[in-house]
Image (tube, rainbow, N blue to C red):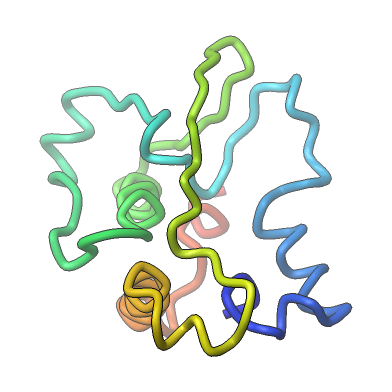
Amino acid sequence: MYRRTILGKTPWGKRALERYFSQDSDREQEQDVDWLLGAALLMRREVSEKIGHFDERFFLYFEDEDLCRRIWEAGSRVTYTPVAFFVHFYQRESQVSHLWEVLTNRKTRMHIKSGVQYFWKYRQRPSARLVSS
């Protein structure tokens, strides 16, 4: 909600987004993370066989967060490594500049819908990474 609404401009919204995107972490250090961008995600075959593939309910957006959460819940780890390098050309198709664009930008609505679905799916459940730690 912070990312796609005016709430992200508030002081508490900005702090929440900084935490969400781990802006205070050292990108030069290998570290466990909650999730990784799906375009840069590698997974062992046995983990994939154990947890399944992407949840098809997430047509666009949040499918990588969901997959990584299920990896943690299965007892495996999601680890960021600075050794790997890739370039992802964001198109930012769901980004809006004005509130009224939420109504006119289909990708923005899909992003919000996927976010609601994700948080509803895991409602009242602590972060799998925190429980596994």
